[in-house]
Each structure stands twice: as structure tokens, then as C-alpha cells.
Length: 168
Image (cartoon, rainbow, N blue to C red; front, side, top):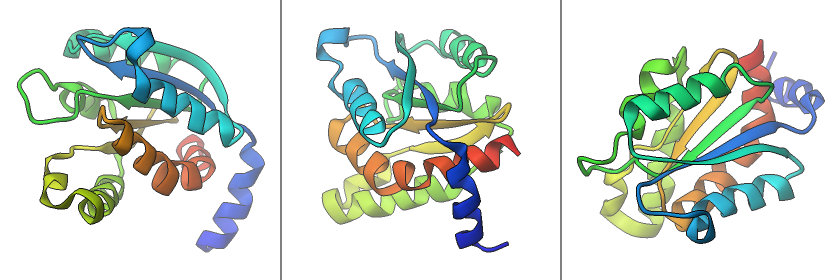
């Protein structure tokens, strides 16, 4: 079965049920622009928003939230924030141990696309995608630009295919 067959089969998935997490110590719902952008883009693509949360930069708390969401009736968890290089950025360290499988190509492609737009600063991105308990989990930077780039160029075009594969 080739990629075209897989894509055709994955279209049967229908709208994806997703949760969005914003990882931040400073944002409030009214200024969570990246989080709202995730919802806007996924909703425009026909997917179903199930939950939104603002979660502190606390690895244990974040792990607990992700574990709980992996038990819910959702297909996709998209996170924004906490993927940088500073000491407070702990999203990747919290999420990576929860993954059953990681897709390194997601981060590689995201950094390549970012490099075309922001140059060498792209090397500071630790964008991540993988699967845990049959759910697709994506960790994106906190910037609106990074969120838009990842969703429009990578995640939305492959979302149904990713969800279909992760659930198999």
C-alpha cells in the first residue's frame, strides 16, 4: 500500500477530535494568540475542538494533563509553547517519555521550513510529533508564526493520515 492508498484510506477518519494546550507561565486566555490560532486553523480544516487548556511550565503537571487526555475520546493533542532552549522550557522533556513512537521527520521538516523564513534561528526549535496510546501528540513553538507554519504546511495536510496510522 503506497502513500496515495494510505491517504485515501485515511480520509475515512472524518473530522478529528482535538485538544489544544498552551504551555505558559504568563499567558491568559485573552492573550493566548497562538492557542486561538491552532483552534482557528483546525476548525477551518473541519476538525472538532474538544478541549483547551493553559498549562503552567511544570513538567509533572503537564505529564499528568497529557496522560489524562490520552484516556479521553480525542485523536490529537496539539501543544504550543515551552519548546525553546531556556531553563523554563520543559514541554519536550515532559512529553517525549510519554510517546510510544516519535516522528523525527516532523521536527526536521519544521526546522527546514523555518530556516527558509527565519534563517539560522530555526536551529533553536524543538518541535515534536509522535503517538501515545493511539493519539497523535504535537508540540509546537509558542510563536504564532511557528504555529501557522507547522499547521498549514505539515499538520493539517497529514492530520487524518497521522490519526489513522496512530489508531491502527
